[in-house]
Image 1 (cartoon, rainbow over the protein chains, first blue to last red):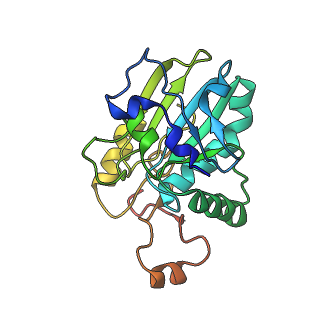
Image 2 (image 1 turned 90 degrees about the horizontal axis):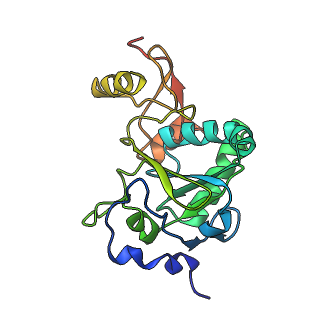
Amino acid sequence: MSDPTFEACPLFQAPAPLKIGDAAPDFVARTTQGDLTLSNLRGHWVILFSHPADFTPVCTSEFIAFAKAEPQFRAMNCALVGLSIDSLPSHLAWVDAIRAQFGVVVPFPVVEDPSMVIGRAYGMLDVTAQSSATVRAVYVIDPDGIVRAITWYPMTVGRSVMD
Amino acid sequence: MRLLAALQRVAEGDVLTPEGWMPGDDVVSPAAQTQDAVAEAGPAWFMALQQDAKA
């Protein structure tokens, strides 16, 4: 069976960074909640956020905050989608560890992107990058699939969910 | 201003700032890098909040 990650949109061939107003590249990928096709979320706002790595302290603090705030996002017709270059088994182990250690269930899907196909399609990565260690990006996508806001943070500083 | 304060705190070294950090809040140490460090830190080795010594 083919890895659905590799069915990401062909824009990865020309990874120019996305701009506000661009169409969000569609993708099909494995997540902690099964396969996800981004375009199936049309009609909802989507916050697609990437993190540098599973099992790291700043990312864990962000995931706990996003998880606790998920009902508020849902009430605003907004779906949360996490993403990193880590593998699905790593994601599963991490979200389970967050549940076990902090009592927080991560209620949104976390996309695996080990080939960095999605990250490159969104311009999350420098085309010459050998790792994704600098990625902490947020893409706010409207119900028509258009990117309406983009933020980038360094790996050393946590974002604010309330932002 | 929150982001600027967080960047300045991290620039002072040794700690990272968690989600939503504000001056005076707890900080986190960088992730453990060895098996021994993980064993010493315990099950929550991947995120341990600590009082900010510079708060």
